[in-house]
Length: 453
Image (cartoon, rainbow, N blue to C red; front, side, top):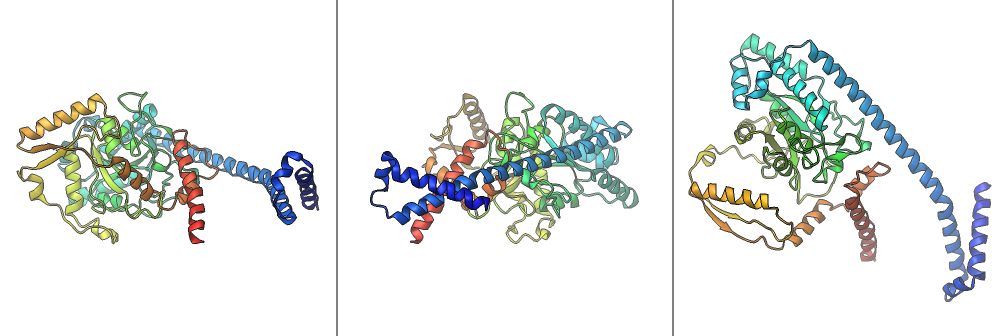
């Protein structure tokens, strides 16, 4: 009854304005009275519906904020428990000073146990994240896995090539029992039901995942902040970003809190943070590493797909881990039909074939800083000294390529992403991008309807 009364009042009020206001009267010329009535009723529905919609959205936003608070409380308790456990545990901080090849040698010959290396890196990661906010969650089961590896080694002497090596993973890389939020509140309390293929493969090689690291909200940013986990800082300069979207990984590794990291890359998400933080990385060709178990925030972009990448403090580690992953069949056994069955080519890696390499200092679209130009010239000189031929070139149609890349990346008109972000707090860095995405979705729908007619 109340709704009918409100509709009647709104309808009568709008009809009075339309029929009696001289400024509005001209608008109704040529309209059938029935059209005016329909418009009046429609407007009335909108006037009444909008407050109810706003109230519902506010309620949903409050629920999402409550989820964030509860999640952070759980993570904080787990972190406090880890800190207490570390007080009474054996650590060997000497292992933090070794590069990965030296550390693996010590683990293989028994100089270090898996547990003491793990504890040392856990303590270091806690110290680093308290300063730079790069770790999101510590993996509670890591201690159990380290003890199992030590027990197996003591019993049978069996050790994998990465025996006892701790490694960290980007937030969107699946770990069974842990969320991959990508900085989006709706993805809280949606733990992975299985490990990502890359995690499975590394664990079979003997490595131990021990923490997850921060990303920008939606992974679609060169910064590293979100409403759940906050802002990650660059370990070299706290006023600067570590890059994105694998920013937490790059920060943690650069600061010495992890010897090895797994990220994902589609448009620079591994390479840019590595460059910003002064470490090494590789983004392999699509489908060389399996993306199975990696959380996605866009769907339908079959032309451009993310691929896992490796980060470390030296190029030797990146090459060694890449080789181990491609030499063994662990990735091939993960059940990913898209994975390319191409093994590691040792001859190509160690070969002395002279290459013809194209290079440029400026793509004509993104301005290049003097430091980048200088680095390119240093690399050019080093490559030429090794006998390679360097050829300057100008990348063609960069603006066209960039627009095509974005169109493919948001092939679903960003519907899935925008729906996931509905009623969520939006990171300020992301807001301009979302405005463009929303406009594309709205106008794309209109154009599709026109084309269908």
